[in-house]
Length: 451
Image (cartoon, rainbow, N blue to C red; front, side, top):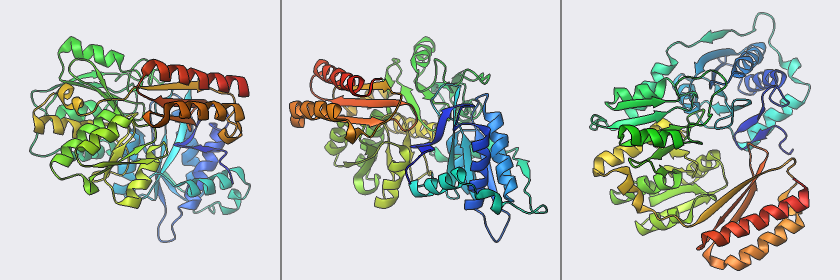
């Protein structure tokens, strides 16, 4: 069965437009409650959300579906996605749900799930959920009248997560004396992130902490770090931390206001751990979109980079398969598997700060460990997503360009799993040349599928 609802990170789309409608959320709640139903106890399911206006209706629809199947819905309110992963495991719930469209604008929304161990669901389990949602058999599994579930609100959820984050930071270190700008994108971390950095001793300059349901990710956060970079320079901060809407990733800026992305952060952490013999199997797990400069930096320090498909869930899957403990994505999803089960923007920033403190170097100096190869990324909006292998003109163009680049560069073309876009990425020794090549591939798409 091919995917009709789930993408690379749950279900996502325009709020109140199929499939992101309350009716689908209701059936998703029923489906997850049925799939994870337990015989020994009444099943419990956490529901968290970000700050989008539409989260209210999806929260209630999910909870109704869970209760209809005899489950108990535990509402934790606006909290980062990694908080739901942690709390699901910590509270021994049977699964967790997050209502968020991550870095997308407010009028999008999405739903994704974690299992009882805090891991995102594998493809085959998501396909099972799709079958239930799209089929008509769910009603036959509904709870009897005396077995209908209840909804509870967990009042101390944020406090539990804050304690977990603080304990992830080395006990012997302190953020005292550091000024940190924290941009929460008016999203899910707007309360917990400033609190964590403050309680660890930092002088915190908060940004994006006034959500109104409509301003999440609007000109701030990890996808728009310019405001944070300006603020870092204005107040003389040592570092800036920009989170996305659900705070599962971060982008940092150094003391000069220069952006440091996920590839550079992985290079910083990996080189530090390699020097101290603490990088498990001397391996970093990254995706096909990571810059080749990361590979070179890690190899220079005696390590290796293993590549996966795009999506932090595939990075985690490779970690579990190979027994690795560190990796991530260029977009800022960093995964410290020795500390948690998924990408966590706040936790990631704390680990980079720990490297800064231990090496007594500013971020601007640490980032020199990696030299980025010229790279260009074009995001082209599409109406439809025909299989790439069927696009003869596009594939002919790609083959010609790959031949021209040879071993000095590479081409990666893929559809976004969360947006109606095709992503065209090229690397090579000459920036203007790869930009021209990227435009040629984009034109081939326009000519073949009529964007």
